[in-house]
Amino acid sequence: MTTLADLQVSSLGPSRHDSPLGSYVAGRKTNEYYVSEDDRVLYDDTISLLEQRGEPVERWPSFEPGGPRARIFHDPATTHVGVVTCGGLCPGLNDVIRAVTLELYTHYGVTRVTGFRNGYAGLVPELGFEPVTLTPGLVGSINERGGTILGTSRGAQDPAVIVDRLVELEVDALIVIGGDGSMHGAHRIVEEIADRGLEIGVVGIPKTIDNDIPHIGQSFGFATAFAEAAKAITAAHVEAESAENGVGLVKVMGRHAGFIACYSALANHDADFVLIPEVPFSIDGENGLLRSLARRVREHGSAVIVLAEGAGQEHVRATGKSDASGNSRLGDIATIVREAIEDDFRERGEPLTLKFLEPGYGIRAVPADASDSVYCARLAQVAVHAAMAGRTDMVVGRRRHRFVHVPIPLVIERRHSVSPDGDLWLSVLESTAQPLDMS
Ligand SMILES: Nc1ncnc2c1ncn2[C@@H]1O[C@H](COP(=O)(O)OP(=O)(O)OP(=O)(O)O)[C@@H](O)[C@H]1O
Ligand SMILES: O=P(O)(O)OC[C@H]1O[C@](O)(CO)[C@@H](O)[C@@H]1O
Image (tube, rainbow, N blue to C red):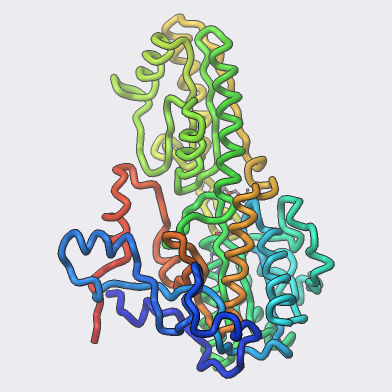
């Protein structure tokens, strides 16, 4: 059973230094920052539902608010902060690296900021990736390009070796920018640090274009990514409606969660069918994809299908393969769907013009749009405040316009996914707000 203790954000210890920001935030409540250490943001969705049900709200989890603290754990004069980006690319990675560096330099006066190259591999000396010294000059305009100046990687690394490296370089806080796998890795590092009784903090900034990390609101770069995917859907629509019996088939990323497919389809309303991992579908049968598509094409002359890469795995032979991080390599549902459509039209003697579009890596290699850039910068600032305050084993997120600290164990206990029934509140309640052991 989840206990209240499990839901608390961990700290390295009591604050022992005055924050350089203290004078302007101390005791003051601003729009974003609630500086009182024990002021907690109630988990709004859950609370609303509980209030409707007349249940007592005190029994339920709350998240600590993000923002600057009047007193901090690390001494800015000597603090050394490490930054690492892991997993797949996502728009905004460079914005985050830039904002972390600038926040440390300009607001805290921290001048020891090190970027580890190529993901967790950069923390393993024998692999030979020299760290990069991050300075305001170096990061000045990196936000104009997609990708990550630090590089990234998949693949397991030994947390003991990583902690040895942090100790060797006298790193006080490690900021991990990565997805659910990276946060599993971050938690392992925290455990290793705790076993050794060290005062090194680990703070995560969740990154996933799939938007599949729970409790954080929306992941940075997701909006940029689905806007790119929406362009492919528009193109598919234009192609399809310009041909006789035109069908546009657009495959987008989304291993376990169909958010990119859903949001890009909703962005321009050009899609007739959206197939996502969360909803199994039939290919044959009266209400299966083929009959439904035939009806749609007959009535409207064309149709567009948006397909998340993880959809319809029940129709695909499992590959039995996985990537370096252990993520399973999915079967090729797009080819199955495409061939089934072509066979069906041929068997019925109907003409078909099928165009297959796969925006693929194009949606995640682009720079963040303006809105995501701002979001990245603010998440990065909140992460720096948390790191300087000695927080550890937590990620930053935004709930209902407030930045919060979410314990890593909570974000790795399950994946965020599309709720086909639209019953977000109930899924939130069932998945996280279990009865608490208050003893
Ligand atoms: N269960 C785990 N325990 C420890 N480390 C892990 C675990 N899962 C993944 N990692 C490590 O985290 C790093 C990134 O993981 P992964 O490749 O799964 O990407 P991710 O962070 O999930 O991002 P994306 O959303 O792009 O897939 C890799 O170095 C991987 O070895
Ligand atoms: O080819 P790569 O870099 O392993 O990444 C592909 C995967 O990464 C993601 O973009 C994020 O997890 C998935 O949508 C996709 O399946």
